[in-house]
Image (cartoon, helix red, strand yellow):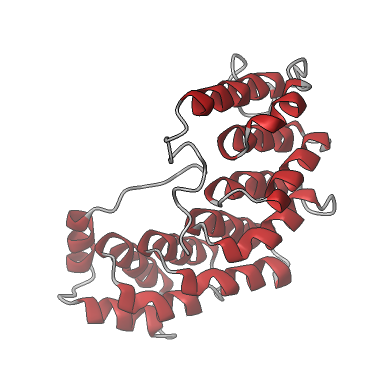
Length: 239
């Protein structure tokens, strides 16, 4: 998953000052106030994110119902930066019920960053459902990176290697290289000759075959260093 940004307490304090606030409770109240301006709530979400204000979680979850995509992005990012799994079921319902592609993409991204195993079935379904958009399927493949590998997860990623979209195949290969075991090397090797370019990526690394080679390299690296828990693909998962 891309776009991770470290928590910065100094930034949080600066945002607090810009909002004319002096306490965490005022941030909580701002997030929970339905009459508050969205621009201020976005800034409050950022402050909660950087200051790690867990008391803001209920208000941040309620903000996931907003029609303002910028506010939705800010609230969901704050939730995964704070590390609240209380938002997982709300994010799953957004994926299931929302008619807006941008809202659903935001929810898939946030679920991936939260690395909550309760989202596994939802992510596997999104990845293999051809009625979903290419963007949603690609994000689902990336989101599975944070979960402890299970048979269902590996099966969905292998099935995704037959996806007509090179972006989906590319992302599925990258994730397999990090979460799978050596027994999938044969399946990955079958895609070494796939020189289909992935839109938006540099030519030298943006082919499906290049992702397959990178996945094989990662499998071999992990075989030699089995104690590398970060490479095992589940360092972010929380119970």
